[in-house]
Length: 322
Image 1 (cartoon, helix red, strand yellow):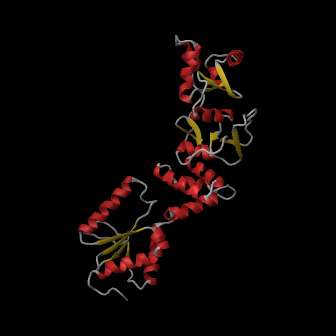
Image 2: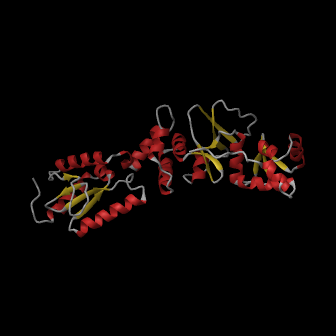
Image 3: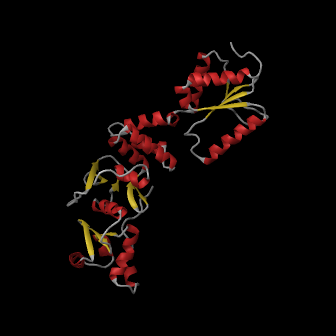
């Protein structure tokens, strides 16, 4: 995802076309950035370095960090202080860890310092003590969220897993799912050997949402082993029902019993969710008993799964036991 430009374009031209005093122009330019401008942006608006320093002395500009100023505000919002912390760390920096998580809505900010991730080698002189800089040699992506440069949801989750306990990481993962921010491929891309938090994040995901790493074929193999272990008849796997124009996951044809895999990963889109609901209605309308199980069911409650299948098969009045 290309990163939006941080420096305003043609600000000097915008100023010349405006009849408003420069102070008003600066306030308008700073508004989308929660009242914060960098020295480079002030220069682009037409202020010289000497004018910037003079305005800072007389209070027209409030110096927040080296090269970062508040315009028209004595008291900044939390968003303003966050963006100021990022601007102080350079063009490639991004809000991260619990502060990044707070911007995404996955957790609360913690501590009195703002966490900012910066590529190792970028100069960050004269930083205020309110900023906790995380230098890294690993590539990371920064995107704009509500006007604030922040690490991606996947990167943020991995960072959170490196500093928080399992319970807090579970809550962050669940929040990411509810907000539509969860992307398994992106998580796989940022996790790996030598990247702190990777092991914990994967473990939490596997515990909270095991089907995120499970394939349909893997679930089917486990289900077939479960059937055999409980002396249940073997099912047909993905047969094509011509009259219904669909393919159930597991089918006992004579008993008209179907078992479907309810995969959290598979149903992350509304279209897939709607398709599976329609499939269930079509099968039930044709007289089939439809049971839906998740990966977690087969792992944590195999006896319950087997009992439910046995009950459904027994309702036909035939003996389906071996």
